[in-house]
Length: 166
Image (cartoon, rainbow, N blue to C red; front, top):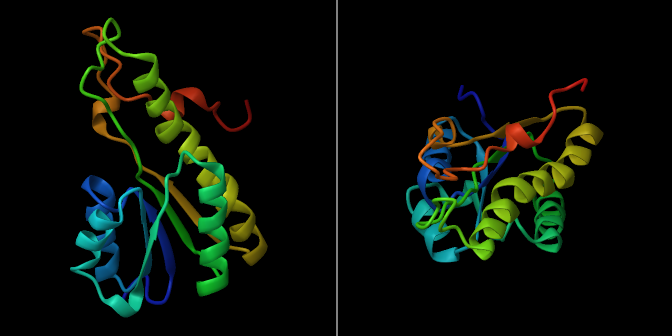
């Protein structure tokens, strides 16, 4: 039996990169997938390699609270539960050196990488608690680890959130 057979897995950032690869891998384990991303065309590309009967595409900008709330409501209504939330949505910008980073680009990074993760947890954690189970996986790029060079790189949400108990 596959490890995730009939488990509902919501994946943000599923249209490319780590989110896309995660979707493909979890599908091999039998998961019922909800692919989330800003661009429907890229979500369709991800879904092209998946079983249509076990795949729901949901275009959503995780930086918009009303869209994330709609996502959680739709998952509940259509699938009745969610066992796993994979937060893989994230952006970076070409001009990320601190001396060149615009306020608009900075705000986009914060809105998606930090606020988007928070909004997704806020929307799905109550569902998981109500059903008595659930796992939240928050992915980040290794580009978030090295520093220096005057570059913002990635804003790491684990630096912004306190450790449990603090």
